[in-house]
Length: 181
Figure (cartoon, rainbow, N blue to C red):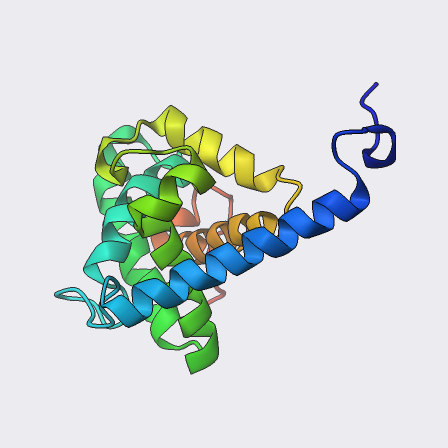
């Protein structure tokens, strides 16, 4: 049996709130710092309307792990690129405020100074193994910090909506497609 927060002397509810507040301030400062310092370019990558080059580095490592089991290894490169195109389209149609928040999440995951402590991936995303990325996703999904759980949920929803909105994903989940009218 796991002790509850109130039974754990090292982490009180007040301590957790202080830590959460500090973590939130850190993430906000890091995101703002990246935006102001020019670390995060707002210019889209070549061939994209909303996704930036820095976003693609992270997403090209993340998407195959998230699609594992839904796509065969042979079809994975095309599925990843198609998912990125769909994600780009979806992001381009978000409200400006939601796009800003999504870019802040991507900035925090893209900057080495925040990526390591928050994800456990200390090197570049290109060098992260699938197992490293799974551990990061699990860490965020089960975090005691609601901010990290929300980040996990956002990543999961963005990628899954982009993938399952594509025609090639439908057969895997048994969807025959829209009815012919």
